[in-house]
Length: 66
Image 1 (cartoon, rainbow, N blue to C red):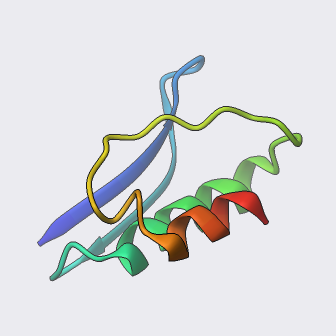
Image 2 (image 1 turned 45 degrees about the vertical axis):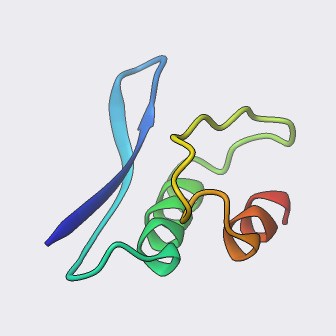
C-alpha cells in the first residue's frame, strides 16, 4: 500500500492524505484535493514536493494550476 500525504509545514498538520495499492498520479491528486478542500488556500500558495514522476506529470501540474 502507498500513502500520499500533504502537510502544512507551518502547523506541521496533515491536511490531506490518500492510500492506494499503486503509486499513481491519481493517488497524489486525491491527497491534494482533500487538502485543498479542507484549507481552501489563497491564490499563490507555494507547494513543495519531491520530483517523482507523479508530481511532475501533466495531469498533476494542471491540477495545481486550477
